[in-house]
Length: 231
Image (cartoon, rainbow, N blue to C red; front, side, top):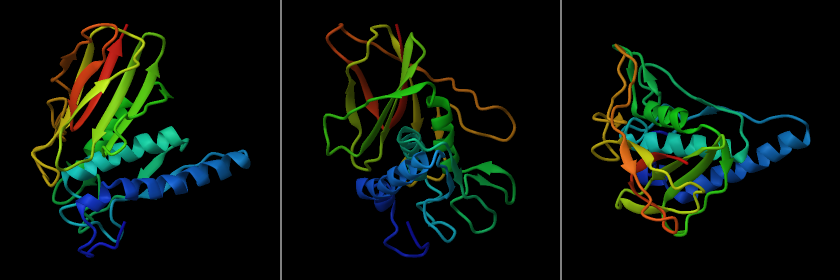
């Protein structure tokens, strides 16, 4: 969305279902056209708010959720990849900032969330509550496990989600992407660890997720989580 500087370019608009569905409509037509010509489609430049980004939106935690949900949506739609627009100076939409020193910005966490979670082959995932502003993506990882990404883009509610239809009953593990608020520019962590330039990111916080019975689902509470379930 854009341009930067327009006061209507808010976090709520960035994360709204309408903004997402408009882009995905274009993506589906692009993928179909590429396949019809024996080709593949890739998004070669992407950012939250064009013309440098919107302070308080492009450089805040909500952009992590936007980037993660976008990448899962594009991959599920058949896109082969996406390039995020970066930069220095006043470009606040960049995932990696270079001045005065190198640092990972909120959007970087969304990319990391996708990299960690996107393992395997997409299988159908549906939300029973069509009004919930939540992205849900399921992937079959070989023959013995699944990974499920759930991304809550709602600023008002944490959702309690029941994951049903999983063909396994073993104990699962959950890893969270969190921050103090959607507008937070610092204090982000994924799996209990933050990204630094001095060492490798290492998740340390995994929560157990159990299934009370074969007829029930796995209960999780989101803002943004990746659940791994095994046989």
